Length: 109
Image 1 (cartoon, rainbow, N blue to C red):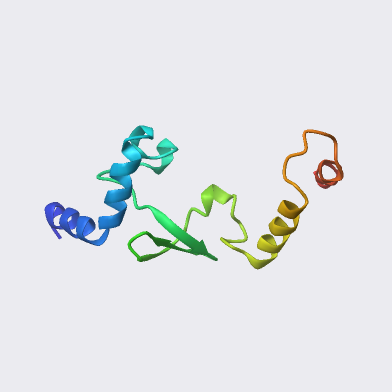
Image 2: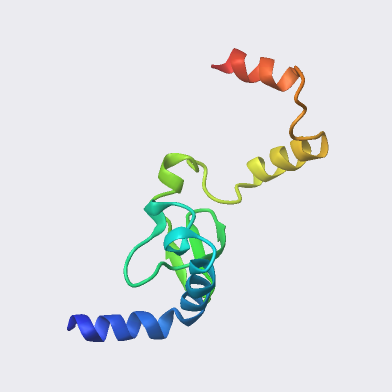
């Protein structure tokens, strides 16, 4: 497929991502929060993710081969992680004082 046709197809399939990109470009350098997230002509903006899949703001599904550069080894929205994070958020997230969680994390390391 010729490059021009590929670009037209990309633009047709990612209309909302283009809208997000134009909006983000007014407030973020390159329209993204990290230079790793930018590419020509504009990046795809993700709306949600679960397991190894992500869905963009245009409703298209993708396999996430990056998994946030390895930080999401258990996948997006992993039920065990969601439960643990909800429990932790309910206890407070930033104390600014010593607490048991920092001791437990250090012991694991």
